[in-house]
Length: 327
Image (cartoon, rainbow, N blue to C red; front, side, top):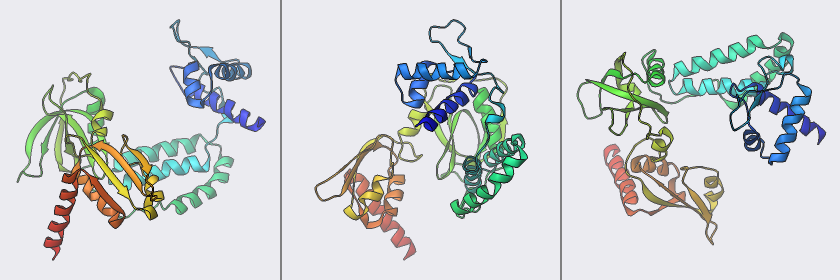
């Protein structure tokens, strides 16, 4: 028990050093799932051990504290699992064709290694190699989009600086690319990377595939970002990435697959329950019927679409069209 308390205080000290704005008692309560009195005792324990502990709220109503950078010094070291997580994430991005994001993680891992003591690296390197091999992150086969070099970097700069983006874009229905200008709001990474952007200042943002973009140019005059737009809310409306009017969906998984299906989060709005026969009933509200059909197909005969009827009909039509094509 005493060791667990020590670990908790060290984690809190790391959190105090890792923030510029500082932590409030409310932050401590949420992060460590404790009551206010316990949060006060934890804060006081850090203050007793580290005399550099300081208030940084500048007289605001909510008090905040922090530890200056470098306070913990040699107490902090990166573990093999943490390094493996960074390198696995880099491999995941690279496997999706997002090399720029992978390079950024590679550089972060290299900097962390450079800050570590040589003797510590010698201890964790064997474990790191085993973890990477065990997780299969060194090689991730499968199809992926091919993106122009520097594309994601340009889009990131445009999003952060609220700069309009002009590009040649080829939509699915068009025979050739056309020149368009959009206001970028964010990036979504699903089966393929997508830019969320508005074609006009106050219109609803749309999705643009990164692999269909070329000849990007960033404008010089920033646009005014819509305050009523939430990228999180925009993404949650869809089952995957396709945007359409949300509808109620009910799926039923067979009893022999129910435990496996219960481990999946099909949508943030979902609810799940077992029926009297041990089957799992999953309900959620989302748009993107075609992507739902694609995913439902991967479950084979272990799932039924209870509602809506239109989703069941669409899956049946897609299967029939695929069968006719390949026959």
